[in-house]
Amino acid sequence: DTGVSQDPRHKITKRGQNVTFRCDPISEHNRLYWYRQTLGQGPEFLTYFQNEAQLEKSRLLSDRFSAERPKGSFSTLEIQRTEQGDSAMYLCASSLGPGGVHEQYFGPGTRLTVT
Amino acid sequence: GENVEQHPSTLSVQEGDSAVIKCTYSDSASNYFPWYKQELGKRPQLIIDIRSNVGEKKDQRIAVTLNKTAKHFSLHITETQPEDSAVYFCAASGNEKLTFGTGTRLTIIP
Image (cartoon, rainbow over all chains, first blue to last red; front, side, top):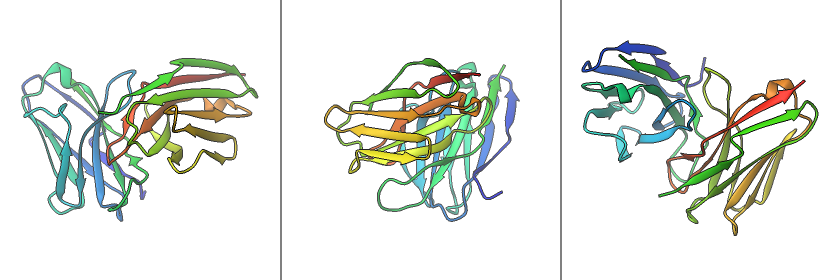
């Protein structure tokens, strides 16, 4: 499968625990994005990387959220001290770059449930 | 920041009829407008997109139109089929991030 992959697909955690999600982009894509989607809503932008550089973070991304892309390939999104409001689908997308706006292709998402 | 509004929120059409979904955006700097289809429990799938230097784009039964002056764009699906049933999202971008509409649940009635 040469598309965007995410792991795990589902995660159930207790409030206060830390969780980490992984995203593997399409191999030739150097831009990687994280979005969050809640039930009945469209995806909301969280952050994006150009290679290993994190270039933009949404105000939605509180201090409890951190994202990395250390070698410009896969990325991780960590949520510390999870809250029930963090329950959502976390989507990763990738695109070609740099220069201009390119098509973004999404992974299957990680569904987080905080109990 | 950008704000995208999408209408209608739900749409039911008879199989074989056409469906139209409309979106408006607020930021005149936006220049890229993709449409995604999302089936239940699956990833958003890019189905068509349009850039601001183009007024209309077609791909088989799907077409998108853009009116930059009015800041609105529309998705048109002709000869609808049961497999077109899904949630459709419009989005707008002027830089890297996509701002999405709230989605339209399209149901094709056999």
